[in-house]
Length: 629
Image (cartoon, rainbow, N blue to C red; front, side, top):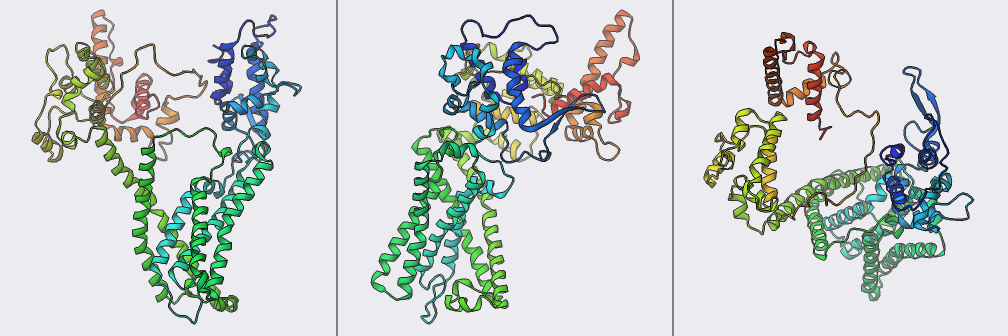
């Protein structure tokens, strides 16, 4: 009861609820609370000494005071100044507190008792519930001790979480560029990025220090005081210095390579190229594969088999391989357009001319135009990654589906899976108990009929209804017949018209065709259920507040629903009228029938429906909005 009721005040902190539940279950003897008499107006001891102090920390972190709403007389919490749009980056929220109670190490070192000289977890497990009122919640849950990252509303947060994606795109884009841009055989100029292809490709290594600077800036912007306090030390500083040296070595090796090529030291050319390529590859691998630090991982990654890793990397190699091939077409077109427009071609500019021409207005404007052109090209190069990812996942999903079915592609394409629902359901779910299936299936069909998903004729075709034969829905049909009905628009009288029912039947048939584990038997279901009250949070659509809201200015929600579910709304009206006829028939036998109790034929003229009819309409609409599923 304490979890269902009193803990509702911290219902958005489920990890806290789990923690208190575990402490309560493990407690032995008395709780240690004062059991003095209290009046009906006083709060319970568990609420006042455990839950309320936790909620007070939450309230003080965000709110300034509680005032009274003059319009309805209810309490109105007033946020602190500057908190109206969104919480500041350093303010703790529910996610931070849930992370604290999820992490065993931080939780055992974070809950401090009053006085600050003892931790809660220094006491025996069975005594911790009695010590919960003694925890200094204001200190233990303060953002300087719990917040693992600053929540900034900027692009730094996006870049910090997706930086490897941008690095991969940049590498592939510059590979496209140097593949398209020809080498420069002229010996009287020395372009900024080199003459030969190996030297020009070497400039890609400069992405390592550039990317590491941007990523480090993003981390500085996002790291929190609590995280710095936990991790900052000699080891952390040494690790950072080592990473910085590794990431900036490509600058040193690139300068050495350009020095060799500029002074034509051919004896050191191959060595300089090999060293620079090796250092750049090591830097890129460290950024792509080992950039995440241990403090970035809130919990260990889910262990996966080696073959899954191989498939994942092969998948992304294929995706970026396709982007490389298609990028050649894009970069080739832009490079030719750049030459035709007489823009500044930066990769062919002599660096000695750049030193003297950078101050010229025409050259500077040309550089700006060229930069904008290539920045736009890079944007469009990145824009279609989502499309190729979806295409790749589609083909990968087909392969996975075939593997799950033992690569029996012909059987999957030709079998009548719907007709095998009874057989497979009995074998895989009911453990061979055929007698139970007709009753279960009839209940399924009856529920779909109650949901107004199918009419009475379709219900009769799908249900057993006490008959000792299978419904017409489960009769086996030949492959050619199914092909004609599916792809040649041949009508099928046994197939339901409702698209939702069709989807349910096909999903059930396909699911039963897969290997299925044995279902758990009640009450041995694994898991933990915690009931959290919603208080005044309504999930039921109302007439004036939701369904007819704004009907004078726009199309109301009820009109949209009845248009989208036109057939189901007609079935709903028919069901309501049948129900009224049955009730009135029984009432007429008793001599108390009234015409006013009949369901009105008002169609979509919403103003003519009575309040009791609106109650049924609101229930129907709520189900279609999926708030009761």
